[in-house]
Length: 174
Image (tube, rainbow, N blue to C red; front, side, top):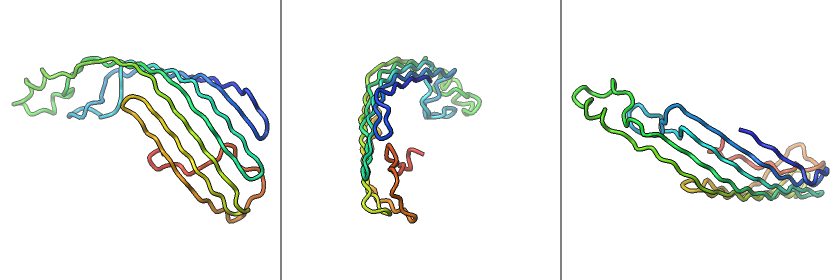
């Protein structure tokens, strides 16, 4: 994975960045199937992607926000493989038939995008409210989120707000 970000604006309370990211993966075996001996995880023999992210962050005395997004392109390829890669786990009566079954390889490519917005407001020294939305779109994969939150700080805070805001992280993203 590689990436480069350029800060178009780099001020204490305002920042605009653009970037270019690249990912290359390679797995020896595709274990994405759900049969005996497979792992059930995405593992193509070839994966290549490029993304161009743009982000604008700013804060004022009682507000902090971020707007951003990216466009991306990806390519993947898998090879034809045995449906049951560990034949010694198959009962001997079915082993011959299982050895003949295969999953066809394939290749695909496509475009995707992400749009993200976060905003946080200091209501008092102790209370903060915020909202966030994260829309991700690609073929067969759209893990979008939206959230509203209220945060209480026992010690209180009158200094600069975080830039960007730091909302709660959904459990699924840990």
